[in-house]
Image (cartoon, rainbow, N blue to C red; front, side, top):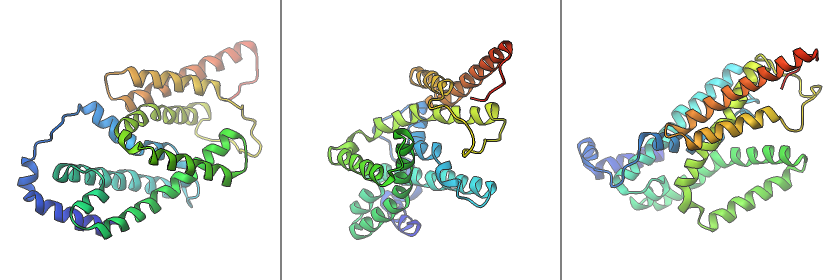
Length: 259
């Protein structure tokens, strides 16, 4: 994929007239900085929030952190840069459409399959994990096929036409989940999760859901950068709710618990 991208971007730079030609291109439409950052967040925030679904298989915590940083900062950053490059030169943000416009249709198809292979395996796995957890079932194959059917139907119905608004929504409503997860880990569990085989967990984490709702509302209504607002407000809300409930338990003389 890197080789194909290098070939395509080299041709794009040549077609644009080099660096001076690229800098001379004036975008047709403008976007605010806040909207642009939210859009970039949306491109991979779902994967970022669910990354522990696959990094938990790493040999060590250090390996998991390094792999995550490389994937999101370098890998996803490169894909975003390529999209911006193609949009400037060819008014096409998709690398496959760019390669077709360059007369590289065969290589574009190869890029499409490689891209799907390296991303959709994680997507399908994430859907299966989340779906089985939501439905309280172990029928992973059925949930996976159901998710694939939903995704295919949305694609056939023209979901790609709504890609930008959809990414903005992802960048608004998913980051607060990460805020809740981080606050729960650092403040509720004191950076040490219990053994899930023996731990007693509630069916619904009401404080977590409440904090997520507060963070989502704040992100959606904020004129500032939605994902940052959502993460911060959700984390602060969960922390506040946690300490209020812990103080109430102590006043009642209950055994301190963790939410």
